[in-house]
Image (cartoon, rainbow, N blue to C red; front, side, top):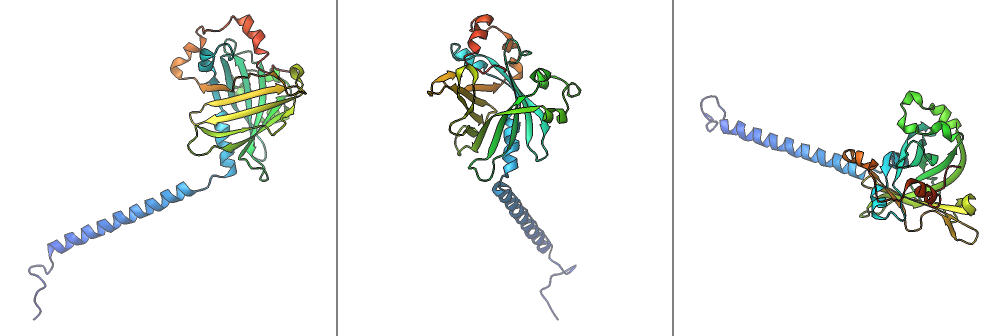
Length: 273
């Protein structure tokens, strides 16, 4: 006669409880393991060339102001409104953005209008994203493009047809870990031809920061390498305006009268040609 198998129903109630605890423990370990694998996979997943282009296009998009910089150094910087928005997409996936800059007091009168074409850098170049700047065939048709409703804007196919002269190209690289920026770069050595205000060539620098801030620095030089237009002290710092401070953008700043500013602005920016 076999003994030692328990009494009553023939099973030990503690045995079922211990089995359930062990099963639950194994299930939790499995979930933790699977979650860890997925997290590692996500963290180690390489960012594609087009992912970088998408990030840059999104970071450039929006309304930004140089208000803080103008308040801090009104002798050298203006409060400029920079507005950028998607306008079209090329067959190869390149994003076309409409870009304009206007004096903060007269946002409806942009003094600079461009198309930006954002796409991955060519594989032979040591960079991540290429941002090309193009003139607009009929710039007046695009004034305040981003402020209009979509049914009042030129259609994407019209936008592509209105991309005119190539002006500059900036090659951006991912910033090293620990830096404030996400991407930064400049035009190639020697810049691009430019004849405005006695210039022979121009250079551009662009940095995209983690707080959605954008720094731009455009300068023109003559044959002798002397700077003939563009701010000299450093790049313009454009920051998104907090919703709570929109009304403050139209409050008086410690800046010269409008007429004086319009004269000085010619020395800092290339006006619309």
